[in-house]
Length: 224
Image 1 (cartoon, rainbow, N blue to C red):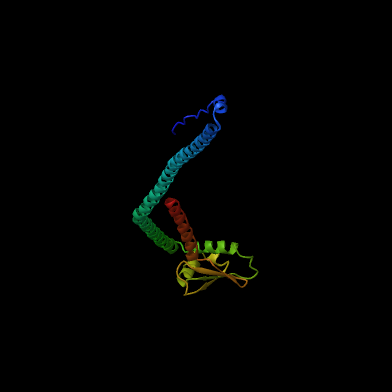
Image 2 (cartoon, rainbow, N blue to C red):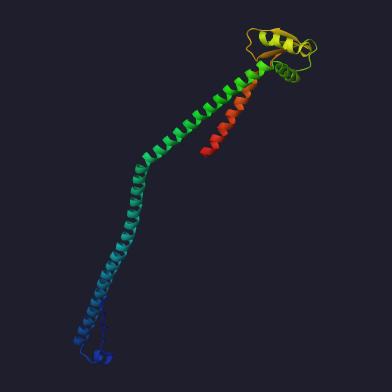
């Protein structure tokens, strides 16, 4: 800001000693000087205010511009990252699905193999000791209400004949009935109008179901 030079008023003694015309002229000169000082001060203050306003506005605009620029750059980087990561995410998802399919197929193969081996073992055991079917009958009857009348046991004809030959005393506790529709290892129990499956198939199916459940839980833990 330009420095202002103070206006020095003439001494009152000089003003009083001057002629009326000179006094009037001095008064007019004083008024003009005051007015010029006011105008000059207003003008310089206005110019200084404009300059300061421009400087403040420029600083604020620059700060806002930097903020907007950073935000726009961040959005562009995120958009590019999403564009680049989309194929990678799809590839990872495909690999995970492939792994899940492979593990599922492997579990099914394991279950099928276990079931096949179990059926062969059961068939071999029953071929050697068909009387073991009577133990299954005992277990089944234990889960049913006590029978007031005779118990009927339906068996494969060949197994029925071998049980009668190998364990006639045990077989005499029930009425053994030959049923050609039943496969070896299968039998049904009927008592007081109630009937239950006492064969090996449903027991094996329950064991296989438990095995599948355990394998599925292990697969979920591995994926997590």
